[in-house]
Image (cartoon, rainbow, N blue to C red; front, side):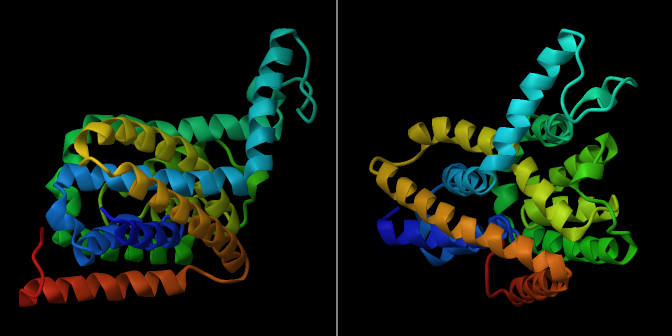
Length: 295
C-alpha cells in the first residue's frame, strides 16, 4: 500500500464510519479501485480496514473527551462510594443499586452491556469475518438494502421521545444486538445502532450519540486485535501508509461526527436510506450484468 492509496482509504473510512451508509462496503470498493484487492489477501484487507478504524476511534475520543472522562470518573467514584455505604452525587436516595448510581455511571454500565453481544458473536465468527464472506458484493448489496428498509421502518414506528438521561438496560441490549448486524458487510455499524435506538424510542440525536459511545469498545477491541495480527500479515513497509491512513480517517471522522449530530437534530435519516437503496440496487445491477465480480 502506497501513500496515495492510504489517503484514499483514510478519507473513505472517515466519511463512512459514522454516517449510516456502511464503511466496510465503501472500503471494499476503495480497495478494488486502488488495486489493493489484487495486492492483498482477504485477511490482509480485513487487517488494514480494522487498523484504519483506530483513526476514527481517536476522533470519537477527542470529540467526546468530556463525556468519556465524566463516565469513567463517575463509574469509579460511584462504586467506591457505594462500597462505603454512601450515596453518589446526582443519584437517588434509597431504592435499588441501579437507582443509586449517577447518570454518568449508569451510562458506563449501558456501554458495557451494549458491547457484550458484538464481542461474543465477533469472537465466535472471527474466521468468517476475516475471510472472503465479508468481501462478497452479493452480501454487501443485500445488507445495504435490508438495513435501509429496517431503518425506514424504525423511522416510521419509533416514538423518538427519549434522551440520553432516560436510557436503560433494555436500550443497551436493543442497540447492542443491532450492532451485531455490523459484522455483516454492508450493514453499517452506525446504521444498525441508530436503527436499534430508533426502534427503542430514542430521539435521532440520542441514538447517534449512544451509537458513537458504543463504538469505542467495539472498534478498540477490533483495531488492537487486528493491529497485532497485521504486523505479521501485511507486507514489509506497510507501517507508514497505515499511520497516514489512520490520521486522515481521524480528521475526516471528527468532521463526520460533528456533521451527523447536527444534521439529525432537525432531519431524518431519509437521505441515507435513499442512498443505501440506490447503491445496493446499483451493485445488484452490476453483478447481474457481469460488470463486476462478487469477490
